[in-house]
Image (cartoon, rainbow, N blue to C red; front, side, top):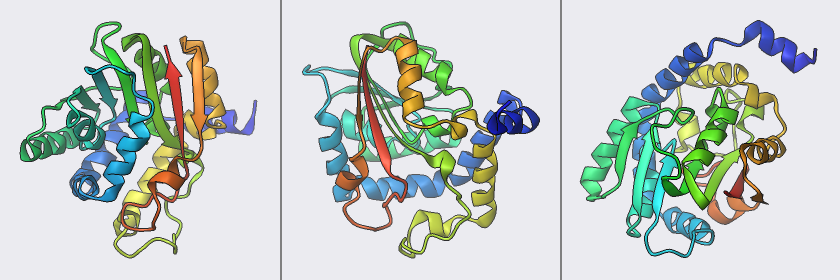
Length: 255
């Protein structure tokens, strides 16, 4: 048995308990997180994200889009503003409450609902696009999630997954390069420690990513996959309150 497997067999919590901890963690962060995302929507970064996404969108005037792990709705608002039909889902009820509140303020047509990314309630082949940002690393069963995302995509539909190797990070470490107003600097030490404890319980933290993701996506049925490691360089052109110090990768996978 490998060292990682031995650690997991001795320390991993039941999935339901892990999910409860994840929901509790993000419930505690939801208000400040939502405020940051609202400021980000009004910043130049929002335009950079749309350029990033639009380069991969299918050439259709009308798209049905699922924003998985929407948080407070950042991607959903951007894509809805382009006239697309967008549903944002998140496991954390307070995040969905924040997204709905922001949607009313913005006059957005995006819809939001509490739902498990690993157990979707939608019919097969419902969406043209499934999109996600910084979610996969938080999932107890990402393999199951990838299978579900494949299931709800239409034939020829696209998955865009933006994520980073957060499982390799120490969230309690000092990050001197970050500005004083950065969200990571304002997190309570206990929240940082809890984030570390949760990720250590997740199997995905011990995989080599995104190589592992590519393998699992192929097993799920995706045949056309493309990787991009330049996302952070294009999005985070300055170190400000929105800056993400963990390099992002982008996986584009066509069903």
